Image (spheres, rainbow, N blue to C red):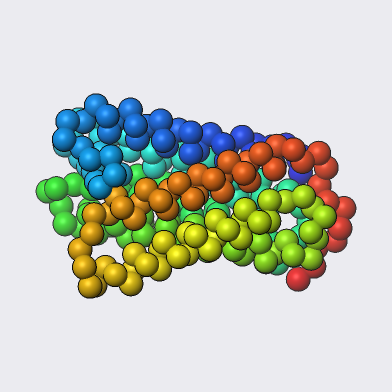
Length: 212
């Protein structure tokens, strides 16, 4: 069980960003007037727009479920301490909120739908930016694990920086959401692929008792 779940997590970690970027470019390039850099991803999933449900399913709902599998894979990958478990759990929670972002689609006829969609999305971003750093700290006692710790640190710092800058300047100036979402998603893509390859390379769970 400990071997199969990490492998499933590794496959899910690679599949999620591949599916998301494929959905994005397929729908964005076919949508007349859609700016690839400036417009938010959610515009392609807004109710009433062409193929909104298909994009919503492929960009939010299914990747959200895959992200939950990634978190489970990390949980069972190594018998680490509480911080490792917390980081894994944060990935699961980020997946839940990504899934809920798709469940609560934007709807131009409903203010509440827009608020719910935005809340789910921003919560997902916030959790996903912190999780790599928690995993990095949780793996410091066992550097021999071969985990991509530098990648987790770099991705975590970059994601937190992007999130922090976005929150800081939003009250001061209006900027297109796409300018925030694109680099953030690129950073998480690198994290997902690197983590997925590591999970796929694992052969046996670490035979070290869990420590706080």
